[in-house]
Length: 163
Image 1 (cartoon, rainbow, N blue to C red):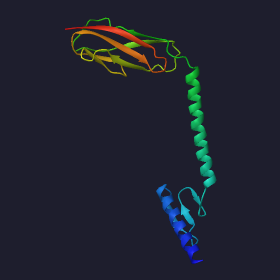
Image 2 (image 1 turned 180 degrees about the vertical axis):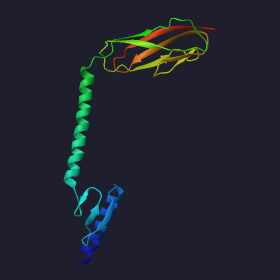
Image 3 (image 1 turned 135 degrees about the vertical axis):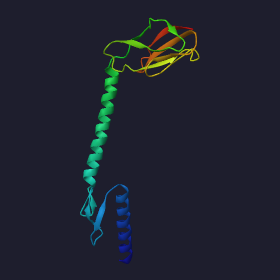
Image 4 (image 1 turned 30 degrees about the vertical axis):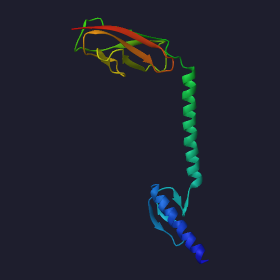
């Protein structure tokens, strides 16, 4: 009987420590080691395990549904078929900064995110997100905009930078 009391005490202390670690605020224990007053998750000394499991299950189901819906949308949504970079018409000189834009088809393509790059960063760099080109030295450079929707479509633009 004495060993059972020690085991029960160790179990209660372990539960209390675990509850504190997960953020349950315990204010009082009764004579049996049950929690009398708390801020969340415990009633009459026992966790509301079923309710907690139901909430966790619902959260998991919601996440899985969301992932499935995103995968379905990605599979059925039109991907990018063409990217045309709108060429800057004014003369471009060393030290200039220009922002390129692109026309993307079809217009109802769902993921119209592009990654921009430069063929020669010694001549011109480009912000990979915004398409902002910084002209560093005179020369010719190719700026590329690549689709991120898995279509592998890209558009290019030749830029000549003068002194």
